[in-house]
Image (cartoon, rainbow, N blue to C red):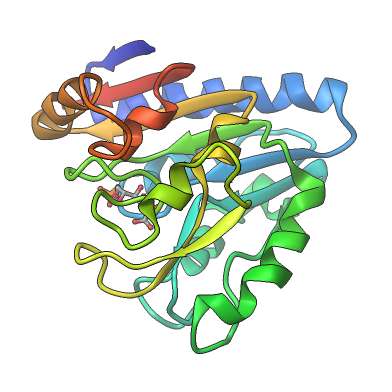
Length: 223
Ligand SMILES: O=C(O)[C@H](O)[C@@H](O)[C@H](O)[C@H](O)COP(=O)(O)O
């Protein structure tokens, strides 16, 4: 694991956006289409804002979320809506969003269709992940109902996930396919998450799901 510390959150957002742009640019030189997988939640907004100003062949980039809350796009908790509002704008408006939500009551009903839509876009070229203070990443939560399956070496691409810490059912890319990414950046802010991340390094993925992806990751942190 590499750890990079920034003087403040603005610097983190600008520097990480540069780094992501350079990873995407390198991938675009090799591949006709490139998969860029990003977190929802509150941390990545400023990084998305910075990326919208970057000139790239965005029309060859497919963007997909790490995970989604099973809520319609009209909900303030929709990560899909966050992507539309903060990432798919400016230059990045030319990118294609791969769906991680469908208008069904339960994620189980849409699982096969969403998995098949994602399959041709794997492996992920550039992966950005967040982490919760409980050490979850994507929607792989400690204590979640399908945690062991989501961490398994033979896991499917996507799994539905329910956990006490998650307000609604979720759908998540499993650890196997997150670990398959060609470049991985974890973005965290604040003193608490830094301590939590250090502790996670000493724990198993069952206890600390973020530990499943740290080996090849660069962690980006600002107070
Ligand atoms: O849908 C989500 O919530 C995310 O994809 C999730 O994995 C997120 O990255 C962490 O929960 C951190 O969230 P914050 O950035 O809001 O702390």
